[in-house]
Image 1 (spheres, rainbow, N blue to C red):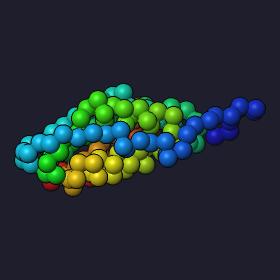
Image 2 (cartoon, rainbow, N blue to C red):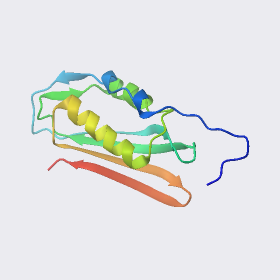
Image 3 (cartoon, helix red, strand yellow):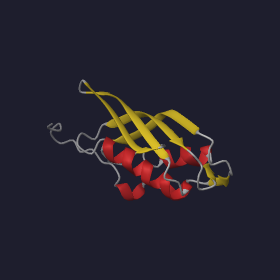
Length: 129
């Protein structure tokens, strides 16, 4: 896709994503299924420079004895806002960051992106089974 002559799109690199913003709290219930979701996720397509908007669903069991604090999760998501990152990489990155902070393997991340160029994209990373 050609960019308009003389126009440059600028966006940040993945090093601007801030997983350290996420906080947890102790929660001892490893068999409790937890799901949290938002339709307010955005990043930037590194190919076109246009925004990628998505619904994100996080499912996990707190087997590591931790839950994610939601306001801190929101700040973490905001750190993606001006980052150039492909949709598939977003899903993988969120999965890896949450897996680390929650110390749990029973996590699944689903991203459903707004239609772009006539294509609908859903990405799923991980398993809660």
